[in-house]
Amino acid sequence: CEECGKHFSHAGALFTHKMVHKEKGTNKMHKCKFCEYETAEQGLLNRHLLAVHSKNFPHICVECGK
Image (cartoon, rainbow, N blue to C red; front, side):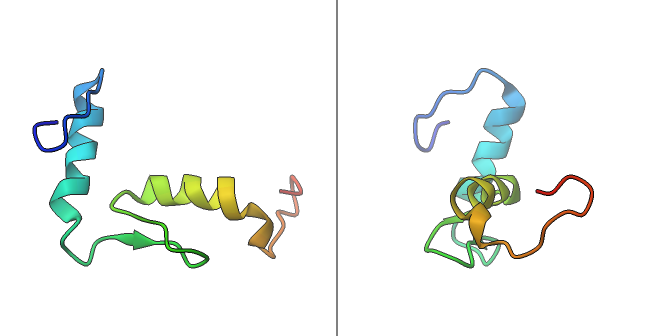
């Protein structure tokens, strides 16, 4: 990435990463409802929610129990 120097093995990953820089100054940031974490990528927010706050979700899947 020309802006921050991060390296990626796939062009698609670099393209997705560049959206972080493009959207950082806009209202398109996705913010965690439970802490101060924020990201321009919805997928990273979803991963954060599962990894850090999964016990905060009151709804349980009736099929798998998760």
